Image (cartoon, rainbow, N blue to C red; front, side, top):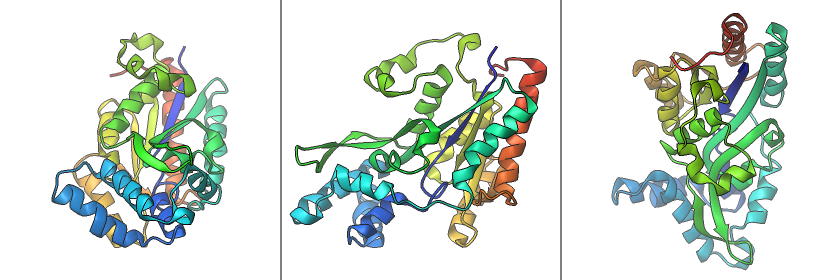
Length: 283
């Protein structure tokens, strides 16, 4: 009997301020100039996908730097170790696990991270240990550890691919060398986590496809925003207006915050349904 809940997070502006912009600033690069004057023209004027556009421009930047300022795997990972998070993030994982156990000790909660950010930054954060897997953009590095080419790209609909990975239990290092396994048909009763037992938390346009997929199949989609930034609040509100999500809350995971309460209610709702009905499949 499948009594498992998956909570899937985006990273940048969902769990933490934009890690890529912060990394660039730490390298002495003007992040606003990078996005507005270098990345934006690639997709606004030349038809690039926004995610490979920013990865390409990072490579170009690294190529133009002197030896001390090259962008390397070591610098990504060192930066990841010091990343700061929104209030309450570091304790939310255990709180959600405890909430599920209160309702039914047989119900487990798995956490996953799907991001368009840089994986070598994310895997070194202090919350990385909570995730069963982390899917994000990867670079190929030369012998000096310098970025030379995009290895994996996680863009808009790419995020939905990894929801299928989760639903079929295809995660961990071994799954990366078997990319076509995700296309295999798996009977509903053998799903690792059906979509209506998933909770998705995200903030941006790259999350729209996963919001839509999870809402369609009866899971819970939660849009978060920075209440101090009117532009981001308006962007998040558009998700509600377009019926992408039913929940929109500030990115504050503290126990007294609306996001904490929303996540707890989502866990309670799914866990209670699983307790009463047993395994819940796709609608």
